[in-house]
Structure formats: structure tokens, C-alpha cells
Length: 297
Image (cartoon, rainbow, N blue to C red; front, side, top):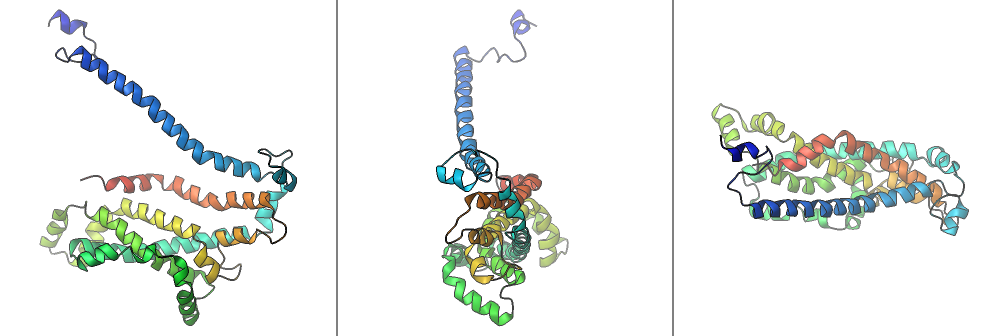
């Protein structure tokens, strides 16, 4: 062992590495860290500042709101009490969770076989693959009258079941489009090996493909459920009573024609978004795994 080897520490680059290259690498990494920290700080600020102002607004009285204050002069706890007791918000949150959750489950039930058939068996060819997302891009207002008529004929108008079915059908194209990217990353050899062992089509789909796509299904399900939870236009036209109205509809009803209590509306909005944040926290591991699994080959 030479003296040069003894004098080199464990973090020192090999002797053949030029000193100029080592110095340039350190300078580059040093420059990247402040840039990344700055971008992260700006992103957090853009995300948290509106929520913090909404929290401050929820404790303001009408005088503070009219004066344009950023902080309340005195906490108006009555805004939270009114949002939780007199607005019908708790029932609306339950309605939204039920409609969004069941709608997402129905969407995944239809989307997984459809995406698998299109990717593995080329069902519909390139035409169906290119046009599967087209109905989802249309404005929802064009489908309000036909959906209202169909639900009335089926006896599902002004019900959570009917709203969940509408949500499921509205987002099936999006779910199929998203699942196609994940299915293309699943090795075809796994399915071929199962077929050689005598597994049928349905068994390959549910016993082989489904377990591999569990993280992807969680990610797509969360995306679809959040879209369902935040949907306003269809829920406004297809629900007419407190037994089926969702959070966006109840929030819109809090804006009166003459007197607008923005403090109560802010408190109700914070309560309304709580389930979305809770779902993101509890499903974070599956969501991240699903979003990143499509990049693994």
C-alpha cells in the first residue's frame, strides 16, 4: 500500500480522477441545491398561502371581511358552529364520500378489463385507443339533460346511486387511458407463462394482472375519486334535496342573494376539503407507488 493510498480518505475520489473534474462536480451540486430549495419554497408558498388565508377568513366577521383585513380582529367562532350545524355540511360530506367512492369503484371495475383488452388484444385498434378520452373532454353541460331524463326513467334521479353511476360512466374513459400506460409496463412473459400453465383469460386478468396493478389501481382510483368529490355541475342538476346533495352544491347554496357570509363559507370550505387531505395522507404510500410504477421497466 502506497503513501498516496494512505493519505486518501474514504470520500476522496480515485487517484486517476482529475482534480478539476472533482471540483466542477462539487460546484454543480452546490448550485443545484439552492435552486431546488428555492423552487420547493415557492411551490409550498403558492400552495399554503391560499389555505392559510382561508383559515384566517373563517374566523373573520363581516366587518373584517368588508374592511379587507388579512387577520381577524376578534375570532368569530360562530362561523364554524354555523358551518357544522346549520348548513347541512356534515350530511353533504357523507354524500360526497359515498358518491365519489362508489363511483370510483365502478369506474375501475369497467376500466381494468377494457384497458387490458385494448393493450393486450388490440381491441378496437388504434381508433378506439385514440378516441377513448374524447367524451371526457366534452363540457359536462351537454350531457345534463340526457342524463337527467335517463335517471328519471330508471327511478334514480335525486339519489346517490344515480349520481355514483353518472360519475362512474363520466370518468371511465380517463381511467382506461391512465391504466393503459401501466399495463404496457407489465411484462408480457408473465401472462404467457400463466397461459402455458392452463390459465384462462379471466384467471390471467384477475389472478396475475390485477395483483401487479394494485398500486396503479390505487393511484387511478384516488384521482377519479377526487374528481368525483369536486364535481359540481352534474351534482347541481341531478340532486335536488339534502339527502343527495354534495359538498360543492352545499357550498354554492351558502352564497345568499343579498347577504353573503364569507366567513362561514370559508369555514365550510375547510371542513369540506378535510376528507380529500385525509385520503391523500392515508393512501400516500399506495398513491406514490402507483404513480412511479409506470416508470419501472
